[in-house]
Image (tube, rainbow, N blue to C red; front, side):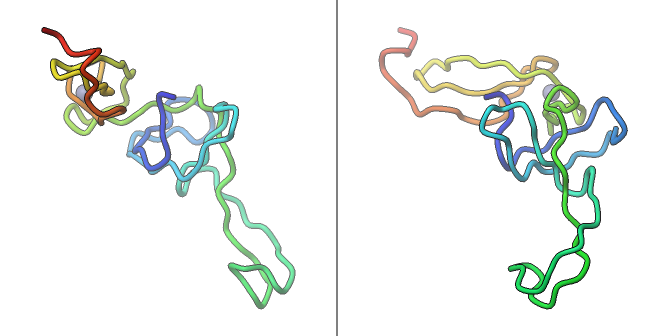
Length: 117
Ligand SMILES: [Zn+2]
């Protein structure tokens, strides 16, 4: 999966388009929808006994967006980019920015089988 929970993303299309980075709070199991913090939020009325609002009342919740409308935000070139995967010299796997080639995060620890000799 190119986008993971906790990633910073920008919304590139749709009604909630924004160029400032926001945090991904969850991803649907099929990987098609993502919930992004403070994007596409709506007020929901909840009854008493709701864990986040024991008294009941109105609660602001974030609704899912289609994953095709978001891009990972690259901290080094400060924009939304496409993501690639590659193996490092030591055999560890990482995600990288396709625009500036910067490493974004490590995906898997070093494995000798993938190391370049
Ligand atoms: Zn970049």
